[in-house]
Length: 297
Image (tube, rainbow, N blue to C red; front, side, top):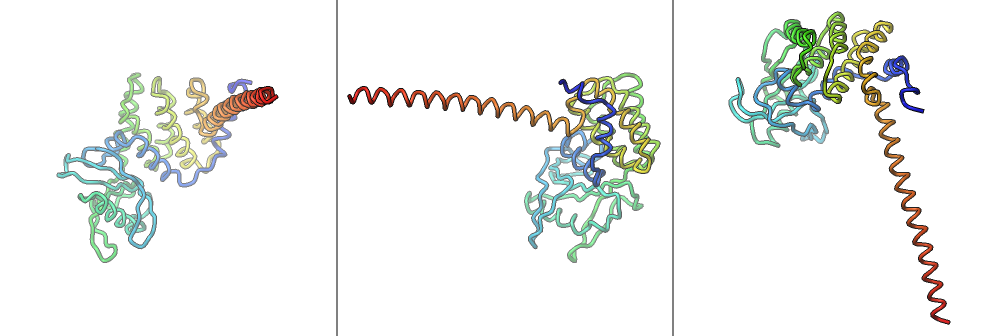
């Protein structure tokens, strides 16, 4: 039976609703920033010129193993005057709760690269200043704050609206505005508008569309967690066009199941070939033994 006959859009949406949704903002930020680092660097207003990603694992002096949200090597641009690194942490709760870890990240990056490191927090909670001087381990260090304001969200939403309304293709940077808005908005109305715009996209690279769908799916479930009917409505809205074009890729579970079936089939074919080869070897071995007996007579 074909996959199309086994699965309906309604069933897929039900499955999406039932999937776990732990720490969706953290998950979505980490996923999108490390999957599309250059585009996110530009779309999310990170400082400097992006060069490449750095490993996220951190090993502290006291033996702890931590993991950064985002670490990048950057070159001079704007306020950045020399080759350096940035560590960007996503926060939607008070920054003070993570100061110690951020300082550990800073020390680690300086030690590993031997160049300056900039600590940045990206948040939708406005502390009233662009820089905060924090204290950790009896040391004072500067923490830059990248605040996502309603104005920044409105600006990006307007760009998406104009491009999609006029059926113009989105650059990868512009496509990242979907993630930017979904992760940081506090307004349900904005999330609903964003979902509608996503549903109206005519053309987009399939994997990019699927990745943004995953982000929107998780953030819809987060923003409307008290309204299951609205969740179903919006998940159906953002999934319908992809369902028609790319059923296999629509959900992680379906992708995984299909990949596993393909791998199982390849393993089965490989086993069959090995079995056939083994039978041939056994047959050849018997023939050799038979010839040996004939020679020895």
